Amino acid sequence: MKKRFLYALLFGAPGFFVSGIMSVFAAGASLGFLWIYIFGDNPWPASTETALAIVLILTFLILWIAFVIIGYVIGKRLENDPGINKKHILISGGLTFLFILFIVLQQWSVGNLGPKSDTVRCSDYCTRQGYSASGMPPLNSGDRTCSCYDSSGNEALKVPLDRISPDTSR
Image (cartoon, rainbow, N blue to C red; front, side, top):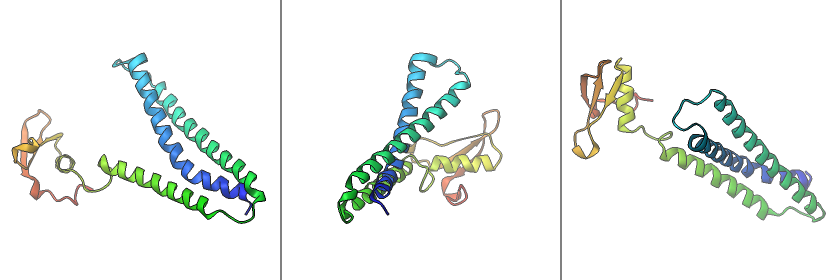
């Protein structure tokens, strides 16, 4: 394999994750700008969803293609050197692993991975029982119960959290 293609791959693999992270930041910054300076708390037009999706996708593609092109150019310059620099392969692999780890840890910290929190378990339980809302007492109260509320807002069911299985909410 020519070095130009190897380096395009070596830059493209971590570049994929960097591009994904940066595109999410760009979409978030766009949302913040639109909220603060353009629309505020007023109803937003439906076209903003399309525009933000385009910003997300274009940012991702432009950055990722730029990483691949940079890798291609660097690999083309290094084609005259015999042998493969294993240090570059290890750096690329390490960066790729680091970005994957960063994404997994971020998703773990916001609760998308790992065990469900007590409030999510309570909400899932009440929804399965047919109630429209759920609630829990403050954490520092020591009361570990789940309350389910009917459509009029009255407490209809109160269950200890120990009776709600953590496996059933998944």
